[in-house]
Length: 148
Image 1 (tube, rainbow, N blue to C red):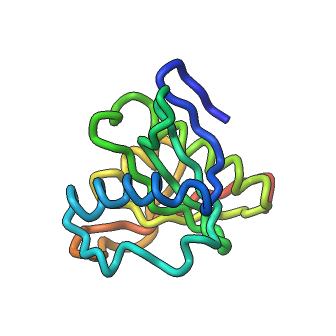
Image 2: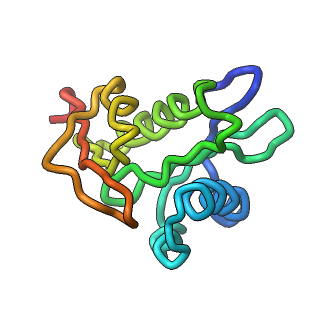
């Protein structure tokens, strides 16, 4: 998994890492972006493959998940850790997992401000802007050519 001197990215175990994952989700989605709490928590969460970025002291500073049907989501990095490579390392980890699982076309729902970030990785926009939790989003897909 990707690693730097400031943080590491690794697969998470939901039973052990739920509190750290929830802390990041609460800080980014509920508090910063004003997503209603009732929309944030899902029964699907324990079924997903999660990845966490941890600072040197072990605290979770970023997260991403891969759903059983190949959707990447809940990508979030604490504000103080942004622009330090955490998001790219998380995306790299989740994409590696998707490829290993044979998911030929991973999909995600990108907040419009993050479209350029995902496009740099090779994701393509599909469709028009739509609202999710009051935030404008675009559907995006990536195709592993060798898995087609």
